[in-house]
Length: 283
Image 1 (tube, rainbow, N blue to C red):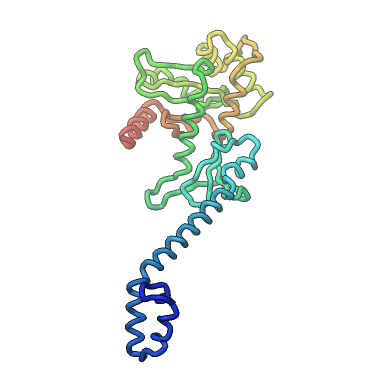
Image 2: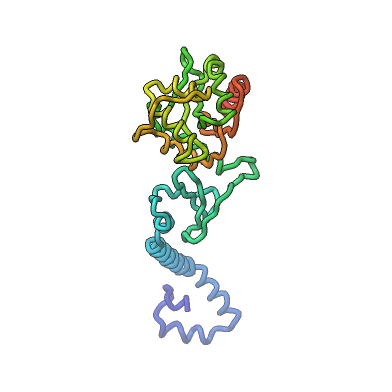
């Protein structure tokens, strides 16, 4: 059949010759025809197949819905740009407030937990949480915090979520001058663990509404009754919401500049040493 399209002449002249050829002559002739004419035909067929495959792939890609849009549609407060590919194929990362979760590409399955790279022994989910904490805290004005800074330029800054009635929070604050002496700038945010409407919440609002927040906080930590009245506009509710989104359960909760969370009290020497070790490890 390939020979019929070749340069040997018309069909009428070729067929009788082919039919009268001995088989030992016919086979080499067929083989020669395939060698001479085959590549052109095969290449054309291959090109046509490739073009058809490319067209089908393009059509499927165009018709396939954007997984990010489908996933975002499941969460009222999530925009499509907040849905990101995760390190695991088929899973997408969804940031809900300051929380990280994972959703299947069809938006049907939600997973909450840790993704750990066993080759590098890294908790990839926690690395993302650190980035989220940095991002969230960057959006909080220091004007809404109670800040205790060194007299000279600080070498590091920590954000501490504190509860007025927390024993270890009071212990930390008694050493605030030592933290500052080691170059550590301490920025306090409020996390009255007992929640809205409680005595601890009221104390936090009194400090937040005081003209001199630093003095008011120190007095409150010493157990002194504040004469300041809570005001309608204060950062306590905002701080509490952020603490909950961070998944905080206890105080003090210390967040480093890297976004790393230290869930508990460290004395000035321990905290300073740890911060320096982390800086070296990441350089």
